[in-house]
Image (cartoon, rainbow, N blue to C red; front, side, top):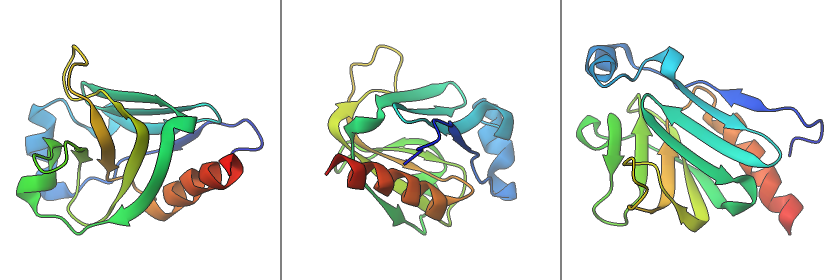
Length: 137
């Protein structure tokens, strides 16, 4: 956990071949980031934003590789309602929430039990999120 009160920033890892498509959606390295403080998890993926209290994080695990059709861009899983903010097909982190979060549409009607993000340092993010879980136990 962030004992120093510092906010951690995780950039998204972009796969070059998907940059033109993502750019059309307003998704570029300068419009995407995951911010993690002692109190808040905030993920911006172009025009999409997920905001949650950090205490709402129930768990996290590494996931991937993914098929491009299911992972590139913002995606809603029809199987479980989870949300993916994907910028590459290699590796990401699936973050599970205690209470579902909004973020796939502007009214906040749809709620998501999990969010998968394809950040540059997935193992480091996983360590940070798991530290939160250990501190809450």
